[in-house]
Image (cartoon, rainbow, N blue to C red; front, top):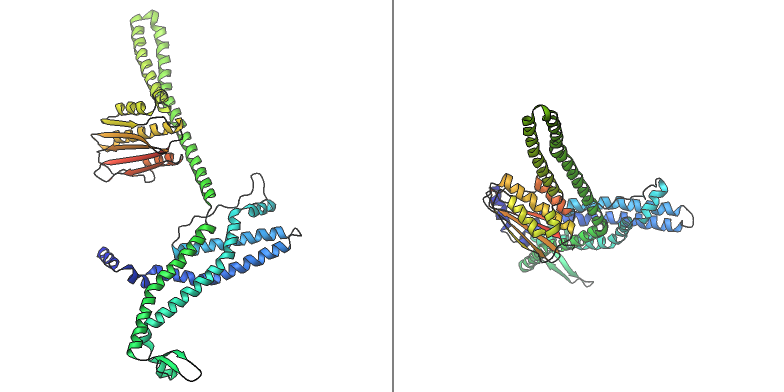
Length: 437
């Protein structure tokens, strides 16, 4: 029932819904509150900047300017919270003030504040927001009051003759006593109609004014593009470091539990065979034969481990043959199509290889598929990979899954992973990587 009611409300045209929608009232409240907030911020910014500039002849002016920037950042935090609550703006916190490495104390923080472009943008917001806030306040409040006053005129016009001794709302009057009142049915109806038009128009004016505030908040109070990019690279670097550490732990575990343990057992078996060589040559020969089998297994484990670090076929022949080799080892029949006329950067090639490797492993272990396909091609400056299977589906990149870790690894090099896997299948995983060749 709730779904049907929601659909019914959306059948009403947006122009008729706008005057009573919660969004309109929230944005109208935001514009009304902007005036006192902007007056407070403007007064603070101008006072502190003028005071600090006047005192620059002494050392006191420097900390005063730093205090002005610090206060502007605090006001900016309040404005971001107000914008999130009333305008529903998703805005990230700006980069914090960070003194240079190895430097601490008040002087270091003061210098960091004065060098922070984000802090100066907050101060600029405090100055430029006030004229816009005054304009938005006056326009929105006037339009709101006039539109509803005209639209509801028939409901309260009785008050004019009852309390004020005039037949209706006066729209014209001069010193000679000539006056024009809205008192006949036609004028009352026309007034109501004009009010209705204004009531329907006013929400869109309010939303336009609120859009201007959104742009100011996003442009001046959010993180800069450069800072956001730096943060993204720092997070990506952390992912790369964690991934490399996990790979090293995996290699160490595989060596310790696999080839190393097998070689230790092999050394013990050969020692025993050496002792029995003179006493029981046949038993020694049998032990040597078993040790020979162990050597083959150890060599195979070392080859698999080396292939997991970086396969020789990828280095020697490129991505196409390497993906074909991966497909040949998959338990599900896989068709491979690679359309690459040249080779991307070695690091990108390696990530592409291990991406397909992990996806094919997932198909073998979890999908229950009967067929799969791997496609690789170049699109502009990007390497595109697509792995499809006709399995049971239901795969996702939610936190904790193997695909989530794979998406993080691709994101560390500006890559992208998209999973389309409805329950019941089929599953299509598309990976995109930079070429950088």
